[in-house]
Image 1 (cartoon, rainbow, N blue to C red):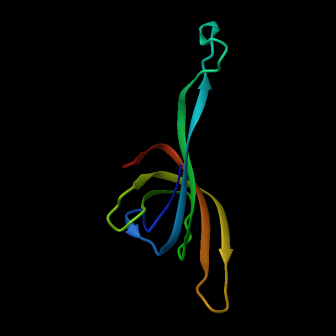
Image 2: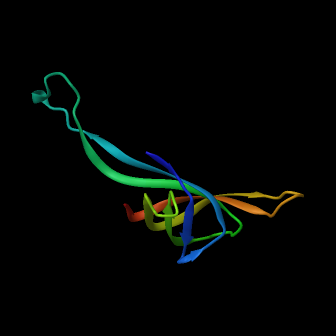
Image 3: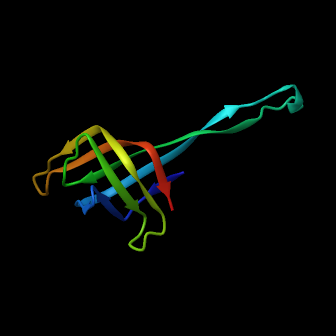
Amino acid sequence: MAISGKTGIVDGACSDIVSWTVDIETDLLEKTSFCSGGFKEYIDGLKGATGSLTSYVRYTGSSTIELSNSESGTVTIAGNVLWNTESIENSVEGLQSFTQGFTFTGAFTVS
């Protein structure tokens, strides 16, 4: 499931985020047996999420984030992340921005 957003908070403060995207994945564990009738069977495994955001602020290390897809928070994703990729954009006509990738570490919530 991919979700793109409208609001974002990093470490408890609105941080000049202009866009974000999160991808949530669940590992599938094969549990096929002789009783499966010749078909593969799977169960849910570990869950994880990665994403990126573009902001006028640069983040390093780890942060707590809360991202929503609307002002009213229709879908909110929250948890601790580690920052792991970075792209810096400079423009003659605009502000310097940072597009940074992150990976959720530990439990995260989707509500």
